[in-house]
Image 1 (spheres, rainbow over the protein chains, first blue to last red):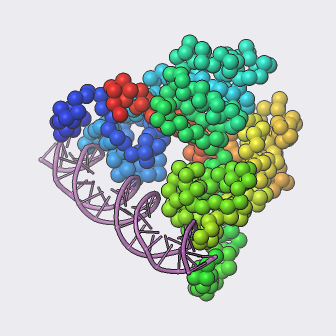
Image 2: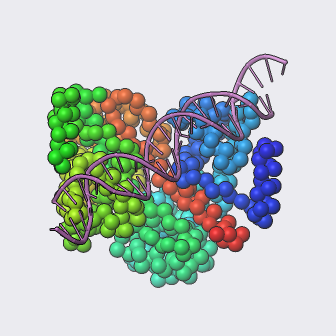
Image 3: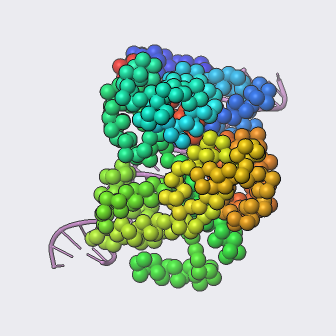
Length: 237
Length: 237
DNA sequence: TAGATTGTTAATCGATTAACAATC
DNA sequence: TAGATTGTTAATCGATTAACAATC
């Protein structure tokens, strides 16, 4: 952090009376953070220890200006004349994103999608532990899916408490989305990763919701493909 | 379409010499179209035949202004004093997005994710046909996964031609992403829905790419959860 | 006709880019 | 020191919202 930032921070503390402080960062920036995370991992894998915003911008196909602007929202992670230390920057991005915070997740719905997610390396890569799954089907209850035990949804609240679950992943049919979410409101769960297709609006109940619609991405692709076919046909572009 | 728009369209044709014309619509609008698609379906399911931008805005948690602005990018689908006819609007959105165009897709990589996608109702809902899967594992080649036959990647080009595949879904390990994509460049495939984690940059080869990173969405959720925990702890907000 | 609601323009807001002084 | 590259401000660009005239 630069000297200037330090004094600004000090000033803020006086006004604010708090030590820990996360400045409000624009949603556009936050949505880009995981991408930095991925590319920094890649750089580490490649054995690079140093990177400039110009290099990174070429890799990521964005402007160097945007990279510097984005990173600066969280502090001065670079050094003039040198660039960014890859490992340090990676550590910082991890801190910001809560990687290695040890978040504990449970999956409700042990169907195709839920099972596929659990069997992937997605969670491990991000320092997130999958501790339990839940389903209603007797044939899966008591079994394990990729090392994760499956419980009956009847014991949901109990097990969530037992495992100190932070985040719940909903991969059950959309019909059950709302009732399940309302059960979660009375637990200590802090976030819902919602694949049900039913967009949840939990208001100000202390649970953060991320609604996922994979199909939307397919549709925008279809739009682009249709457009490109049209252009080819009409000899355009 | 209003009278005014009609004459503008006529004027454009003169300048332009073409009949079919898709105006350039901003990416922000395009990304919102699938959401309109979903909510219109919901309205149809509910038996509503008419909706105003104000009603829809309440349902979708966006401004009525945005809805009118968005829809108008593609033509005047509404009627002053009345609102929008749900079925007509749905038809139009479907046309724009290529739903019912009969896109044919193939999945390369019959692992957990590929299988889960194929077994979901996502494609059916959007009028997309899954015609083939490909893998290298002898144990799955020749089998069917949810009605879809699995072929060896050795016969990829041949089968893509045979089935007239428009879009390929990549659900194989990221190591094979680039080599597989380069094979696709020499086929008639128009789009790639890429789940490999390796971001593909195919440049101007006529193939549209949509890179999907589900994990990114998990990470932004983690960010928000961490922030919210912090705020609770510091008694903030 | 009166009421309602769109289509559309103009105003605002936010996000990106360019530029350069600060500084390592 | 000179060269490189950040941090940061100012300029530009794009997207959203507000407002209202057009019109069903």
